[in-house]
Amino acid sequence: MKLKPVESISGITPTDFVKEYLNKGKPVLIKDFIRKDSPCWTKWSYAYFKEIAGKEIVDIYGREEESQNHAASPPIGRMSFAEYLDLISEKPTENRLFLFNLLKLRPELKKDVLYNDVTGGKVLQWLPYMFFGGEGSATRNHFDIDMSHVFISQFQGAKRIWLFPNNQSDLMYKLPYNFHSIANPKNSSEEEYPALHFLEGFEAVINPGDTLYMPAGWWHYIQYDTEGYSISVRALPSSVGEKLRGARNLFVTRYFDDTMRKIFKDRWFNYKIETAKKRANRALKRRK
Image 1 (spheres, rainbow, N blue to C red):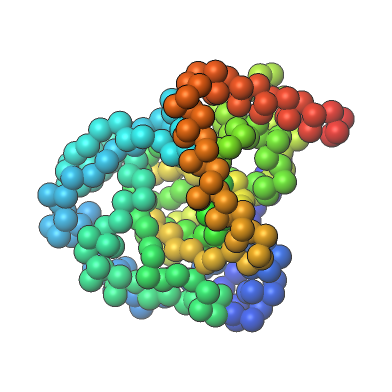
Image 2: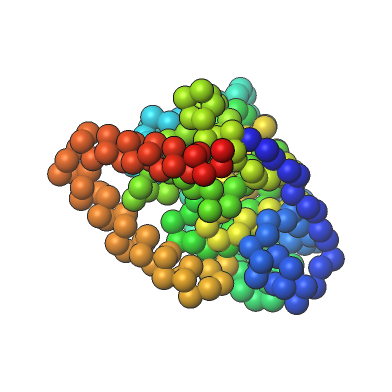
């Protein structure tokens, strides 16, 4: 596997960003997507979050390798938001909060984040999601089901993100009718998954104030180098094909997979694993 650093930019105009990055589907690290004068930089802290929402009960997510037969991982437990923030502050943990919408529970927080929208208005600023994780936690390798462009901004701690274009799906042992792979690009061995050797992607480490632009359909494997949290906002897919694919994923593919899993149980999952390996072997032969 080969990883290149993601380019960093700042001060770009919307016209140039759309032309050079959005339309080309090229990942980039944006240094000024969240404005420096945003109140969040001086106002937000774990203590503040506990004060305004500490009693909220949140779903906790753990190791995703244990739920490969699901389009979305089920939670492993529940606790108060304050208890979770104390947990990640005290020690490394693989526990994460997935799509926890604190900004929906406390909509006044949206006013604390001021965007430098480099897309010229394409970003859906009204639909942000927050992600919290402990040091050492990670997501499984996946691409987003709706095929949207994603802008993920770090507010505390550091995340390491590996990105791969969608045309390398077979090399990552993508499960059919799902949006993740059975191989983990960091921990899986190339002896067991030899096609991983031919992966070519990008690596970015995002720190507070950094925003990573992830193009529509790109695979991403996210690792928490430290505990911390981020916010993601989206922009709709650029092409008609991506829009149609996203709609199919949302309204057809995932429900078809759910139905087949309920009917055939392990037989369906085993079929998908074998299919993923066959496709990877074919892609491997083309590379050799």
